[in-house]
Structures are given as C-alpha cells and as structure tokens.
Image (cartoon, rainbow, N blue to C red; front, side, top):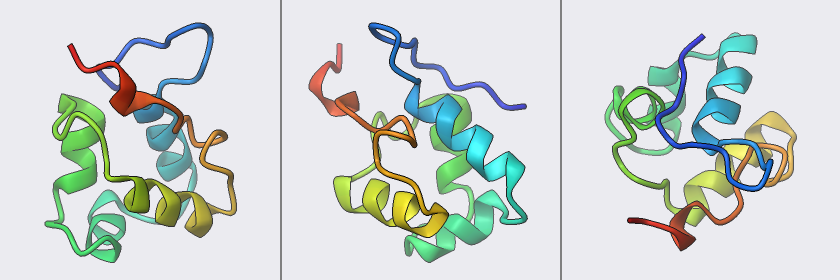
Length: 85
C-alpha cells in the first residue's frame, strides 16, 4: 500500500493514507479518479505519494468522499490545510 507523507495529528487519520486505502480497496485507478476531478492522470498519485499538492481543494475532497459514499472525515479529510509549515 502507498503511504502518504503527512503525519497523523491527534490520532486523526492521515488524509493521504486514508485516500490511498480507499482507492487501493476499490476497482478505481488513481488516474481515473484524477480525471474525474478534471486533473492530470498523475494528480492523486502525486498527492498520496509525494504530498503534492499539500492539500486537495475542498470541492475535490467532497467529490471523492461522495463518490466513495463516505463523509469527508471518514476519508481523513479534516483540517489538512490548517497546518502547512
């Protein structure tokens, strides 16, 4: 399984790791999901493996959570953009 670069904070799931877990358990590819977001095929894989971009846009988080039938919190999406140092 791919591991994200961000560290979990206060026991909350790491958004990159949570996203990788959901994608790896699905039949969907990173490239197909990236295209669903109108992004280049490597967009989500780079986010998960290299931390680029630092955070997905809130509407992208929402679309992915909706697509997988999860809440944004279940997908590990909480305050990733709140602490960018």
